[in-house]
Image 1 (cartoon, one colour):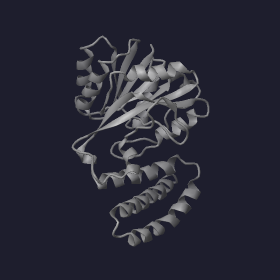
Image 2 (cartoon, rainbow, N blue to C red; image 1 turned 90 degrees about the vertical axis):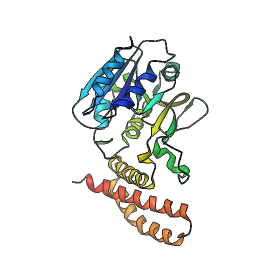
Image 3 (tube, one colour; image 1 turned 180 degrees about the vertical axis):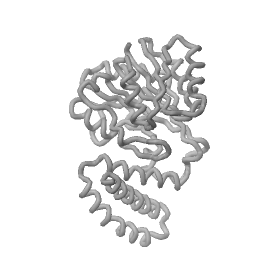
Image 4 (cartoon, rainbow, N blue to C red; image 1 turned 30 degrees about the horizontal axis):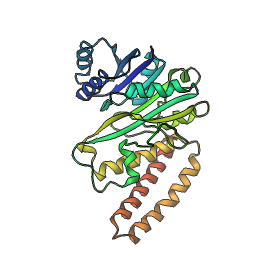
Length: 295
């Protein structure tokens, strides 16, 4: 089996249907399977997966994972996978026709490549907000790293909506840390960054613009309130995954009053105010992340 496509999902049955349909129209001619890891859904995810499975000869495998958590579900997919390469597709994303072919071809070009990511285009429910700052676009899982196939140098990483791994890397490396990654409604992350950082110790990481996916951004996330919450949890995630927690705590405590002063100084500049508020929120997340590791 050349490739395993893994979709991890929680209560998004109709999104999963669209994701699966995009996998039935691939240009890739090699053998591949699709695994849907149902992470304790209470909707009709099982029925949707079985229904789509009856429409195709491509193996579509339904797996129920009781323990809640995105990293838990991803690790279950890794254990179940039979392919040489494991391609992760978000349950609310749709793959382009050449997606599998594009990812696999990069892996096949060099055995030293351990991880490959692709372009992620946003599918906004409505229009992209005018207030969204360029540096915050990545927090909506938007990625347009290069116009050609290139190695991604640290600290750049692919995003989980469109990331793939050589299966054999997990023969010697632990998979996703399960104390990181989303669980239920929290926005804990950094599980991909932590894993890819370990992969880089032995392999290279590549990006291809030719294997792109379109990722949905629902109207419920298109607000400053959601973005600030996402920024807070990014701070928590960074602190939890870091080994230098004492230094992070001290620096964050010292930075918060500085950003408060700058917010007052630039009171009439809305963009600068939002940037400073974002930094305050992020540092609060760092402080919270350090404290939660000692509970």
